[in-house]
Length: 304
Image (tube, rainbow, N blue to C red; front, top):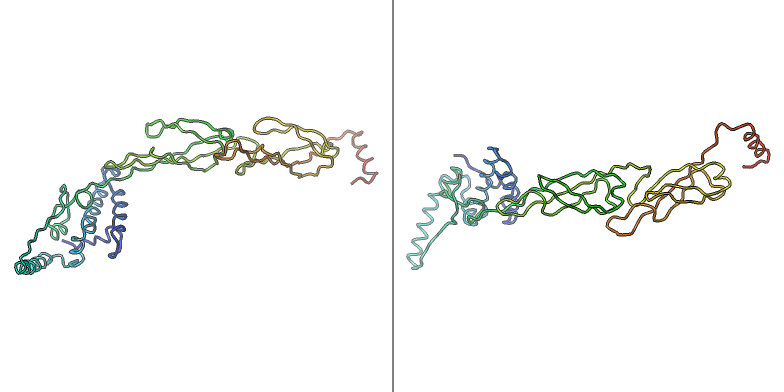
């Protein structure tokens, strides 16, 4: 029989506190739990070893005995008998009674090392015979939507693991954003709570706008004559066409802001970002002789 380092099994220091041992045990027990690793003999073996380590280290008496004898476990019983003999002699002198009972529980397969030190038995899951409850697995899903889809709040039904889940998607969600639907993950183990469902949004931009948070950006062409003399143009927004005045002498690359014509602000009902338009002056091509003559006349006036 080989010595088993229970601290190493749980991945904790031999000075670890009770809470640290409990946390390490829960993490590993969940990792190797048979319900999460069906038909995995190695996981089952690790699960039993983790339970065994917890059975010892979570019980103050067992841990004390384990720490005292450690690698001298073959002689543990001899040491214990000698100690009990001394204790009995002391009690006879003082007249005090003495009883000892170990926590009960359903039997499981313990190592020969454990049987030798502690006499077998033990709790099925954790100390005191209490079955440990585990939170269910979290599920992850991806939902693909178009940019125009998330311009308004909408309702959708998702099917996850055969279950239909109705959810409301607030306007303004962003590409890559993840939301949590509590309690819609995997079922709990041993009566533990269900896990959560995490939905990550994949937003496909099928528009001519560029989105940056709550603001939209777009480049539009304006005729040279409009840039020079000014005038009125129509531009597209996500809610339809709007009329816009171009100031006389507008330079190429000029940016204007349409307040409140951007994207909805996430979970802020009725609030919107802005739409920024950048003008690109469209130069005329294929001029007629008459049009070319007009530009030449302008050049003669030294118009810059």
